[in-house]
Length: 273
Image 1 (cartoon, rainbow, N blue to C red):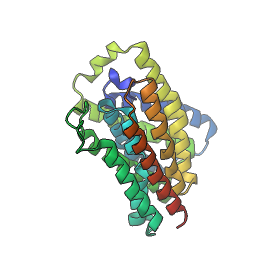
Image 2: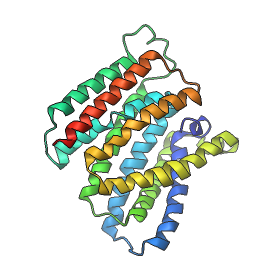
Image 3: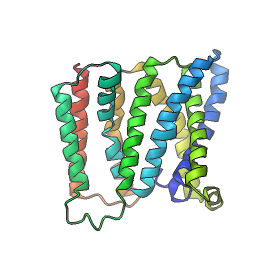
Image 4: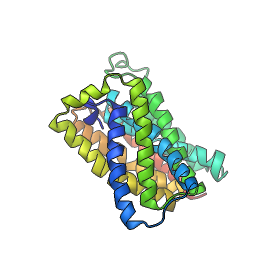
């Protein structure tokens, strides 16, 4: 995402990414899944696609355009907090355990150390902080959409994932037309580097990654589903350092460990409920 949005604005990138992936997966599903979805199933898939892709994933693309990818991944690592909160408030109605609350507090400490608003380098930070609020909203929508799958009548797995992608793509085209003036003119400046990142996002990030996640939303409990967030920060921090030439300080590494430790505690606590 970081590389692809160097040229193409975030929402237009997401629109083309999921239009391509959704079309490919839709064609595949026509040949392998004979069951045609009902109107209610399509509406359910459209809602989930809006929450996960139209808002959730696109907010991540927007944030990573302005902030280091490793830091964005660390914030996304706190997504189990949203899973726990929404599951308690709207779905299972089961109160989180003491271990879960402890994990939330530990994660917040890690995020405080990461951004250190009272530190000496706060004024010299090279990226804005407003994308954090956008990213938090995107994470909330991602969690809510994921938890809703078990309560909704959904199409067959591949058809569902394809329709979610296409719905998210349409939403991103609309948002891009309003918020990203001149976005289409950037397509003329796409480089080999940008095209390679785009193809990776279509085939690996969407067709493999999102389709796998879509399957998990139907077959895994919420506490287990959210554990994917363990891996993202570690991978993104080191790839951002190795490929994106982003800084990787000892404090960032320590904060990363604390945040992930908090997420582990949250999920372990959830499993015991």
